[in-house]
Length: 106
Image (cartoon, rainbow, N blue to C red; front, side, top):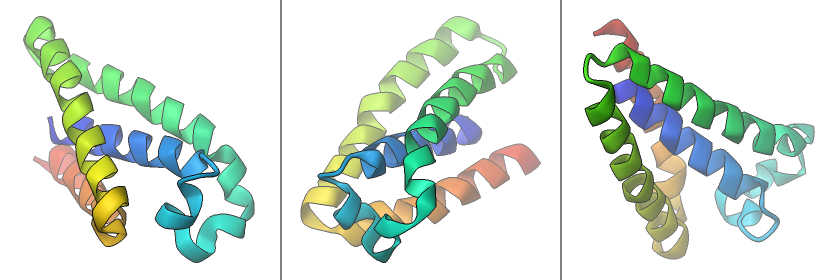
């Protein structure tokens, strides 16, 4: 589950950071780097990987329901972070990576 949460948050972050409107808020000084063009591909790839990570669950139906439920939850965290405290949205990236690492180790 932790891997799925991390992948979903990173996917949403990458797709939001790819948009011209959100790029200065989320990326700050990194918005001029050449990797910005690949954020959309990375975001959709992470969405696909998050769906594939559901195969690790024993009950596929409950895994899909959890994935659909996590999607608006994580999008809301990212949205509120971008609106009120951009540092919260940026701090979610290392937190998502730690979640993914913890999910792979445990």
